[in-house]
Structure formats: C-alpha cells, structure tokens
Amino acid sequence: MMISVSLCMIVKNEENVLARCLDSFRELVDEIVIVDTGSADATKEIAAGYTEQVYDFAWVSDFAAARNFAFSKCHCDYIYSADADELIDAANAEKFRILKEVMEPEVEIVQMWYVNRHAFRTTENFEKDLRPKLFKRLRNFVWIDPVHESVRLEPVVYDSEIEIEHWPEGQHSGRDFGVFQKAVSDGKVLSAKLLHMYAMELYLAGEAKDFAEAEPVFRAAIYEEGRGSDERMDAYCVLARAARLAGDKDGFFKWSLKNISLAPCAEICCELGQYYYDAGDFEEASIWYINALEETEPILQAAAGKQIPLKMLAGCYEEMAGLYPQMRDAFLQMAVEYKGRLLEDGGAD
Image (cartoon, rainbow, N blue to C red; front, side, top):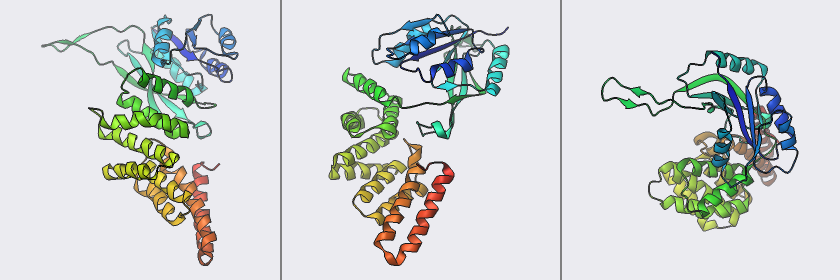
C-alpha cells in the first residue's frame, strides 16, 4: 500500500524561492503544512496558493520548537521536512514516487542526498551529503531479541538514492548567530554538534562583531568538562580569527599555536597566511597557504583547503613579482598557474 506524505516546512521571508520549491514537490505529497515564523513579505500569500494549512508561530529563537509545532500539524504516514530553498528534479521525483509505493512499514527515517551545486554553494562545505529528510509520523515500539528481550530504541533508517537540490539565494547566519547567543545567555551549554555548527557558520559568514560576540563562548568551551579534542580544535580556530580581527597579536599566536600543537588544520594555516599577507610578508604568507593547500585538511570551511589558498597564493606571487624584479616572470607564471587551478575548481570571483 502506498504511503502518504506530508510536506512540512517552517518559513520566514521566502517569497523568492517558496513557489519554486512547492511547484517541484506538490504532485509528490498528499498534504502541505507551512508554518510562518514572522514573514514581512508575501510568503504567507504564496503559501496560501498551495495549501489551506498555513499557520503562524511566534519566533522564540528556537528552530526545534518551530519544527515541533509544524510536525504536530501533519496527518500523513510520513513527514517530509523541507526547506524553502530546495527543490527536486523530474528524475528524483520519480524515485520519490517509487519510494512511496515500495516503502517497508518498519522504515522510520529515510535519508536523501542533499546536493549543493557550485553556483548556489553558500555553505561551501560539501557538494552533497546524506541527510534525514523523511520521517515516520507515528513510531511503533517493537520488542527484540529472543531472550533478555528489550525494546528497539534505534530507528530503522533507509539510505535512499534520491537527490534534493539546494538552491539558496542568501545566508541566514545572522539569525542563527542570534539563536546561538540566546541559548548561551539562557544558561545552556552548547552540545558538540551545535558548537561545531556555530564555528562553521562563523567561518562561513561571520564578521568581526560576530567573532567578538562568540569569543567568550568558545573560550569557555575549552575548559568545560567533557569537551573533546575536536571541540577544542573548533574553538582554537574561532579564537584565532577573533584575535586576528581584533588586532590582538599575542592572542592570535596563542590560539594558533595551540591548534598546531594539537593537530594543524587548513583554517589555521589560512589564518597565519592572512596575518603575514596583511603584514606585507608575502613569502611567509605563501608558505602557510601552501600548507593549507597541500599539508592539512579543513575542519570548518572546505574552501580553506582549496579555494582560499589558491586565490591567496596567486595574490602572493603577484605581489612578490613586484618586489623582486629579477624573479618577476617566474613569480607571475606561478600566479597564473594558481589562478588557473582556481578557475578549474570554479572558485574564481
């Protein structure tokens, strides 16, 4: 028997992308539930053209609370959790239809590939990854094991081949930064996952003021009981950039060296490269950018391992060509090579 699916989303000011999303999914789902968290544009009017189930939810700086409210309004067998800036193409829509026909009743979560095309890669950190997207609305608890029986607590997860396209038009990091800060001000300790996401968003879209506001959070995290080396690595990266942006030379080298002593990452190499580039020491800057490109891996921002060092190495060698006339042609040739590699990767401005 074919399962029924509710498409469920929370939205705010999504008038530019909402119709595109709903047009691609409307024939696949049996119900559309849209929860608006305070739009000031035509989002709600657009949503009303697709469903009568449009609800308001007063924003409380808590995405989980909004999604829980949205899920509570769904009635179908499964809930597809959508974002307004995603869509599904015809080939994957057909895979979705087939999935609805053949879904085994014990499956509780279906993962789908979340795909970022380069033109829309605002998150920068992946081309595609598996994400839980389809959830069984009501879960049945089942006893397992023939002896010493127990209730199965882990959900049954199916990894599908369905690809969902992510076509964002901009960043939502400013809103997210506020959520992180409110959680901390409310006395909550950020989990390892949230601390990592906070650090990733800072490296993606954070400005100097955002890093300054985050500095106490990440400084405290270093000393919080139960924090592991991965969390300290994230913190060192954030603190190093915060210090560099604030002009705190001692703090910058303190946190950078702590990272390098633990396990150097591409982000810190780029931070050191930027420090020396800003100081006019392009030879030293190039050494650190080469380390970012060839000797280390990124942990927060994929671009730190490729696009950023390629771009900055081209800049370093152009600057060095002007400083060392006797090596001008060789340095310019190296700059051209790095620019070519950046163009091949699609990362040029």
